[in-house]
Amino acid sequence: MAQGITAEYLLNGHFIENGENLIFYGGVGTGKTYLSTLIGLNAIQKLEKRIKFYTVTGLVNSLLDAHEKGSLSRVFKQIEKLDLLILDEIGYIPLHKQGAELLFQVISMCYERKSMIVTTNLQFGQWNHVFGDPILTEAVIDRLIHHSHLIVFNGESYRYKESLLHNK
Image 1 (cartoon, rainbow, N blue to C red):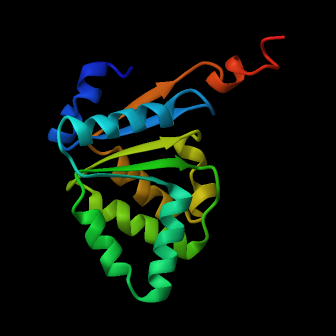
Image 2 (cartoon, rainbow, N blue to C red):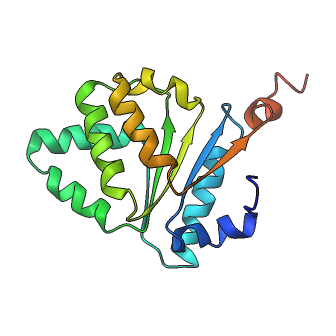
């Protein structure tokens, strides 16, 4: 856990009340998505917060579809109503230019207005491969890291540890 961050702080949504973001960084299968989902469920059930969970690819595809249909403002209004936005898997799939720009709009819209949880398996220095533009990448990272806690997930994949191959 990051220095000064406790499981209680995360699970009880104190970071949401304080307008902070969480960035979960680590290898595949180390529990980033699991913990972000658990935090999101707690925020809904215990705190009655409005949250939405997206894979980054799923959100970008929804944004591109809404843009094509002329309903992008409706999607943005839905996101504006949230208390917590969870963006899972930044870095798994590179984004096309328009998708990267739309994701930047969402992150900018959330900046200093609502909390975000972002999961990634890439160091920030590798994010240019995802966004494809160094200036856009820098702007995304700058907004995400401000008011954020970086939590590093170490170890091998839980799925691998539980697999039949590993247990032979």
